[in-house]
Length: 284
Ligand SMILES: Cc1cc2nc3c(=O)[nH]c(=O)nc-3n(C[C@H](O)[C@H](O)[C@H](O)COP(=O)(O)OP(=O)(O)OC[C@H]3O[C@@H](n4cnc5c(N)ncnc54)[C@H](O)[C@@H]3O)c2cc1C
Image 1: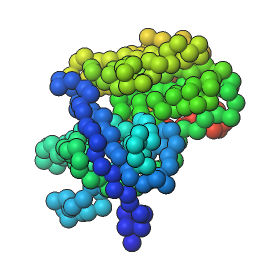
Image 2: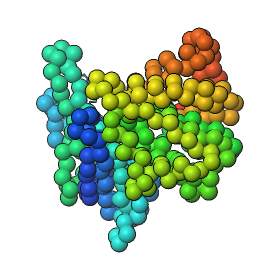
Image 3: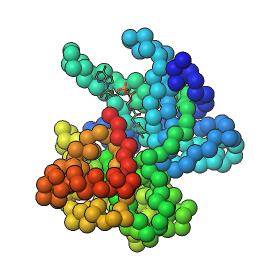
């Protein structure tokens, strides 16, 4: 029996959907789902899975994809929960015929209309756990929709935990327009934490259509290399990486330069991993 059939699913209603990136770049939508289930509980940084109905052209029906929860609130007048997710409309090029195909789940979600019922499962655990010691440093490195688990994580440590004593740094790369994902005060986003003494965000955008968000991340790291390098070498620094798969080689590239050699960076990375201070959430 497939995982899809075994796991109980919930119905969510699409409350709102809006494009938050400009027309010249990748489409990213902020979507709010209402889950009419009082027992539904989630924690910051967790994800849900969306189940796509119907079959693809090869007859496959089990299509299930994960989306990070950006934030969740109790509905003001009902008993259920409103969850916000960010979805990038995804396409892939077939190696055989060179044709462009739409990703199933992301296109299903981006095309959904307010009021539509969407089946979900979860929530699922986040790879990013809050260090036990408030003096620990946290280095967050990500691109595009990978900001989602970081947004809720930062909100959690500053708002609900009452602050953080270690240094928290966010290095973030995005295409034009994606800055709206977190620079917008009205959405109660990261800008709200800019006054925190221990929090600092370094972002870089790319305006070139052919240049990816991982290039922007490289720039944000290179422009502030000393800061990133000093922090990553400390024995109490936790490294969190989130976003597209391309983030990993981009980070390696910049860090090899900072370390002076591939071997030196590999050795440092191994030390961080051995101390359980390296966590990642990477996807296509
Ligand atoms: C824990 C977790 C959290 C995530 N959070 C988010 C999030 O917050 N926001 C977000 O937008 N995404 C997120 N993702 C990614 C998301 O789950 C999906 O992978 C993404 O939306 C693409 O799914 P899709 O069904 O649209 O595309 P699919 O149809 O699954 O295709 C996706 C990719 O698979 C490859 N592919 C598939 N079929 C073929 C084929 N026939 N030939 C060649 N290549 C192929 C391509 O590289 C393509 O880009 C997350 C992933 C994980 C694991």
